Amino acid sequence: MTLKTKDLTGRVVVVTGAGSGIGRELAVHAARRGATLSLCDRDEAGLEQTLDLVRSSGANAEGQVVDVSDAEQMAVFGKTTIEQFGAPDLLINNAGIAVIGGILDTTLADWGRLLGVNVMGVVHGINAFVPAMAERGGGHVVNVASAAGLLANPQLGGYSATKHAVVGLSEALRIELAPHGVGVTAVCPGIIDTAITRNSAYRGGDAAARKAKTAKTYARRGYTPARAAANILKAVDRNRAVAPIAPEAHVMYVLSRIAPPLARRLSALMAKVAE
Image (cartoon, rainbow, N blue to C red; front, side, top):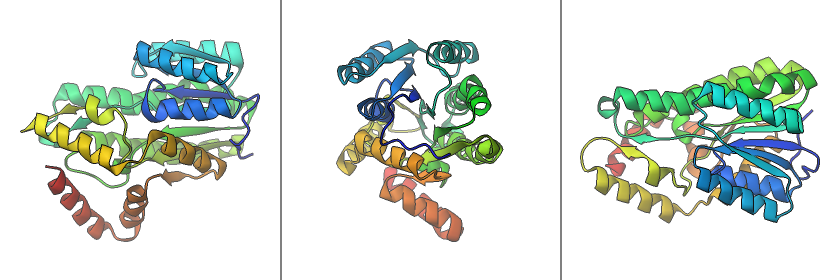
């Protein structure tokens, strides 16, 4: 059964990376629609701010400080959530990080962290919550990937690789969980004005200048996390397999499938402009 998010009264929603950006706005939107919330983030201050926001709208919400790359921490988060609220109706694996730079400039430590948060963080979320969802029968899983998971970007080499992995994982999981009535959506937001551009590590030359340019570009683009969150929930309502959000993500999605050579040229041009 497809989960409908217009009214989430009596529904349990889990959001990782809820301390800022899209994760925070997803929590706020769910709270306004009546959901019970279990939230986590590694940033305690940001998580508390989100909890204050959702509780101010009357939501029953709990939060835990969790590093999603830590399997044990995520297992505890899942266990305590399910014991308190039951299996989630909507699981949103949102937590993610970025390293800006080419593959040759990305260190092994960078790779470890990217894979730990962006890939294994999603795996840990699935392991912690999805067995209970499948056993009950029903619900929906959202794995937040990226437009860079649709079209490779040489200035986001490691990040792009991890987000391609999330898309592939989500497609496989969707097929596996269909007999259990659990939907799965890979979300590919696009250029959204979140803190990820300010918090990312930049590799290669002129890091400070590139960071300032990227932040300015995202701010000028003006696609807010709140708008992204609303459209992500629409994708859940439609049970989309892969959901591009911002217009540029839709373009990348279409081109990557119908005109791969053109998509690669576009990617190279975008990377050149970003330098």
